[in-house]
Length: 212
Image (tube, rainbow, N blue to C red; front, side, top):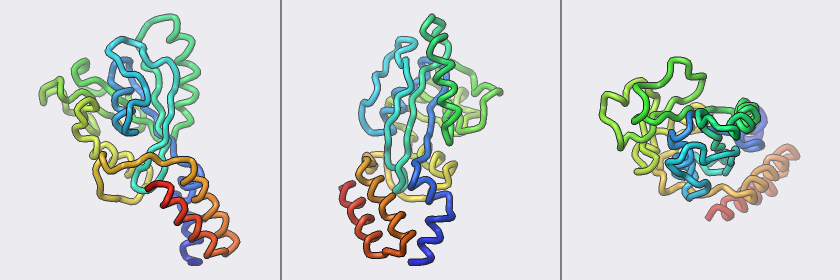
């Protein structure tokens, strides 16, 4: 158990247990970010629409990935060209810079490939159901958020970028990771710092039960 305590104190994974990593979806308006957001978290958390500028604020939700809580952000898309964009985008941009990982989302039916100026992160081509093979080159991952195609590959890419351990499973097997589980894991870590092994194990079991 002392070896486990050392790992929890010193590894990147311990930091993710204490403060779940933030993954931000970013990209132009109508790229399907909100549809992808809903597909990842497993339910319709945000409104998705073909109308430009439907998402006006940064929306967040926590989901489970390979046994870890991950906070996902959906951001307003750039390019709507209205007055509201000028008010929202600066604040949204400042917030997105605080993310641990950015997933840049582009609509395959509206571009010939990912922009060469894409920042660090994962570059995703979305709406694969609406385009031919020629438009799918140059992206890190190609998905159809609407149809659910290749989401497992995107999640694996996100897990790898965050340094999470690999775990087999499909999108349908993921479950929401609630506040109770996070609190029990934090209590377990605090108990380990006091060498209270029995207490730590009890909190881990409570965290597991809260996810069932």
